[in-house]
Length: 85
Image: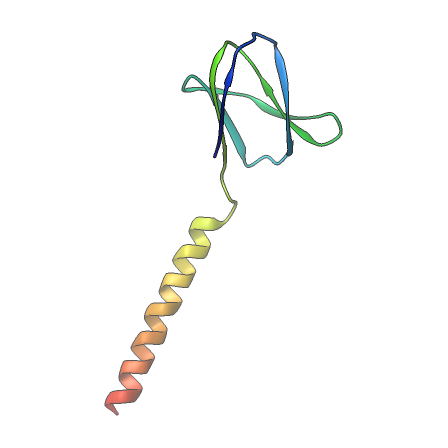
């Protein structure tokens, strides 16, 4: 997560991180639109002054965690069954 205070009321803001649709932005807790600007940077539409929070939601992270957890459980189960036989 990236956070900073915005002290001006510009209508658009370019952030020096690469654009990806997984980025979400909030200003003072209100969601704002993100978009691609200046050839690939993250842009946000600024609606007011205040605290800006940017969050990157990794695509597929939850599914990966679930698959990994199931795999570890199955591995442990196989290990226990082999040890008992």
